[in-house]
Amino acid sequence: MNGMALLSGHVVHHLSHSKHHAGRTRIRVPPNQAAHIRERLLAYPAARRVVADPATGSIVIRHDSSLNDLICYVEAAGIVKLTGLPEGAEETLAGLGPVVLSSILGMVVLAVIGPRFIRL
Image (cartoon, rainbow, N blue to C red; front, side, top):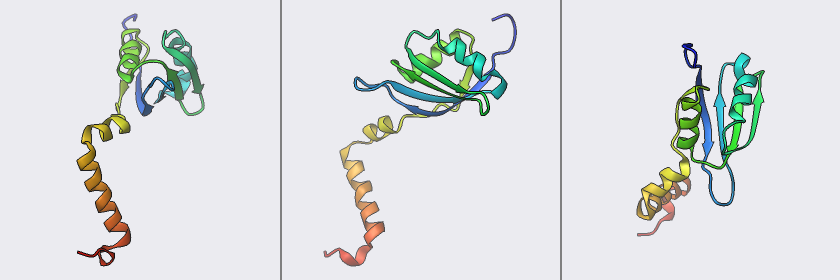
């Protein structure tokens, strides 16, 4: 960097990388910088595809890495400072465990069909 402040971006959506598919991360940046940031993201070694919409400032990155690795790269390379980092839904659900998930499912079923259909 040449002393200029790092542009700010926001992680809008993230799907984790797995052995079956690339990770997919959507970030939002200033619209007038989207094309320039896209060009710089193409240098990321794990990037498979980077698509930018300069009208909205939305950039979708398909990558063979974790979200953390992507963030470390873009910030270390001085491309953009990312905020609003989401926790992947599948990681959150996996952390809950089967007992908690079964309880949640039971509550959802009760809310949908109502208690009058359950015999005790």
